[in-house]
Length: 249
Image 1 (cartoon, helix red, strand yellow):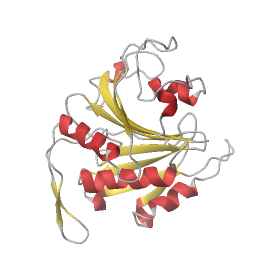
Image 2 (cartoon, helix red, strand yellow; image 1 turned 90 degrees about the horizontal axis):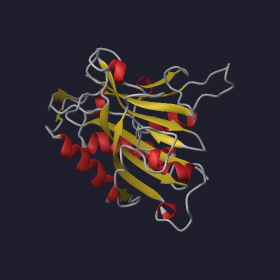
Image 3 (cartoon, one colour; image 1 turned 180 degrees about the vertical axis):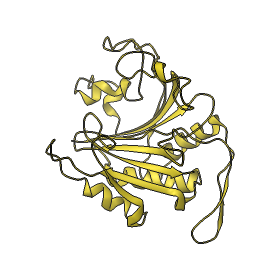
Image 4 (cartoon, helix red, strand yellow; image 1 turned 180 degrees about the horizontal axis):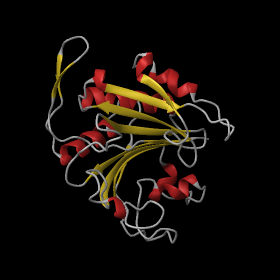
């Protein structure tokens, strides 16, 4: 049985994509393994921009509020014609039943019982196949601490919302990548010619092979020169390798 998830982190107030450099900024990140799949981190731009595509056609990114971005995300997955997701309310930012956390710091926290095989089989969560949520998160201490980075850049915050989709033994890499692409280019209308994807390029020291499966799925949407291999430092999450989408500003 595998798990799949897709995550988008969104600042509570507005929307800037967290910069990797001055020109390239990440939109999504997928971590992909047969045990668990997590997709991505994104902080969205709230201002519209008109750009020229490679075909010469002008595409415009809509000037949406954070509320609209959140609603479009949830609607896309809840109403998906082939893979509809159940909406799950945000859990408290101070976890009630998890003594390992001072604050809820990720959208996956409330699903930990499912991942660990500890979920009550009679509960609603045990019956979930696919889920979508908007989780309020605090990162002000512990391993994932953003407190010391606040004010040093324009994208670290101690409080934010993390939009997420989750598949429990249902769809996996291909469907997650296809839906992420459709969400970015068809729903949010980001110009496709300014999007790059990375995949885990392997690591000999860790004994890990390149994730060519994810690479091949991305080639259904992008040319080879926009699907790039990255090493463990950039494309490795704690439980699996990772693939990311970058948006060129």
